[in-house]
Length: 124
Length: 472
Image 1: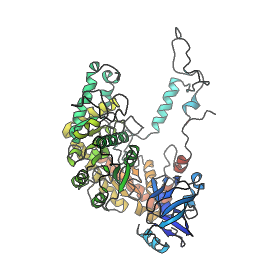
Image 2: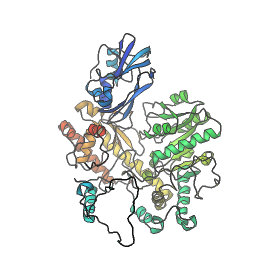
Image 3: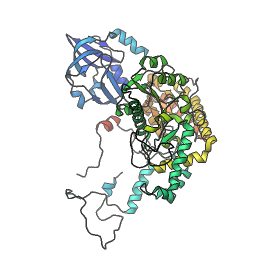
Image 4: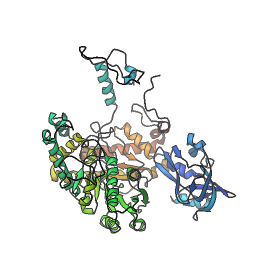
């Protein structure tokens, strides 16, 4: 299982890449493994508000449908529309397949760095 | 295998219409093409369905421990009674005075199910379990609105619940509040206390819960909800564990749905017809769906009803089969069925748990969960691989990956109708499958090999839906 050093992680297995005032959000390698093959994702629209700790998207895999929780509060400024047609990217390249980009108001206060997240996953 | 449309040849039809006195009639002026129905001779039609039926695994062909689905054997006497012309050939628009027997069926079933559930009245309109959930939630909403209590917009649901619970709540216009389970798999009562309040319309719960355990704190749970003015809904999916032993009404539930097609032995699994009647305490009776049948006492005026949720009186012949089952078994028989269901589940649990590296140190109810997580970590064989391997041994797989809170979950529900011999045989087969997996992990990734289509590409099946035959 891969954990990327330059990202922050939520307990619910989303990653955040902070770039200035913006953040890209996706799901971790651990998450895509647990989900199994993803067949569908519903993504919010540009301009939508996301709230830290609240679901902003849901994914359907061959096993189950699951919520994806936002690690930040803010406004969606871009969505990765490629995922609508090729949700399998979430499995193939979880750290490349960002889901939304958010203009960040505030970050969730219990995000982990890569080392902490690796230890957290080992306990799961 | 060819589809009926591919077998079709013009003129081979297996019917003859009278030629005299019937004029050609145009059904719809706007239709410009012919209605495309397959043209197949009677013998070919029968061979087609025979071939299909041979490809099916049903309860008559083998063990079927699909957890949470109660795939018990359905006694054929149910079908014998349901095919009596006095039941099978009546019409719902007939005057009630000409179908007194059918009316009595509902009266008896109403009385019997109220006795089993501890409720005061039933509605037989809902056509299946989720339909019953939805109808019950409409009744709960109508109840709160009737008391001018419009602030109750939330329904609390444990994270172990059947997926239909949150779906029904959202469909009925509520917001879902999910609460976690304790590590032992019970409702986290402290978490419940934190979220319950004046905005709580109801708590939805199944007991025994989806982990196959009886909620020991059930009285405290229902009391907490009632103290805050909410109602408590019982998902009857797991009633097969407790018939004649404990009643939802006595646990403090206000409204229940039942799956007659599961617990009361009517055929299911092929997409219906099912029957998901709801039963409730007196306070909710005025809000039940309207009925013209006289089985519900004291509700002649139904001004507050949520209305009708289905045409006529529900799936009558399914209800009738359920009544025949109840009468055949009687009160003691129903209790015995539940006791045997729990005994069978515990027996199989004790046999299977060691194969998964678990110790069966707890008592389960009518179903149990084993996790393939340690096998997966060790040799990369997952629940789905074991499930596919079971098909090659002629056993229907259990429910897998549910409940969501257990990793690599495999949920077995053997039901009461299986003999000790069958349970022993199945345990032997499971031992073989998992033994073979350790000897050659790849073998299960390639399973099943003996079924008509082998390992299905589930991703492709979900992404490229082909829902109808394409003529061109």
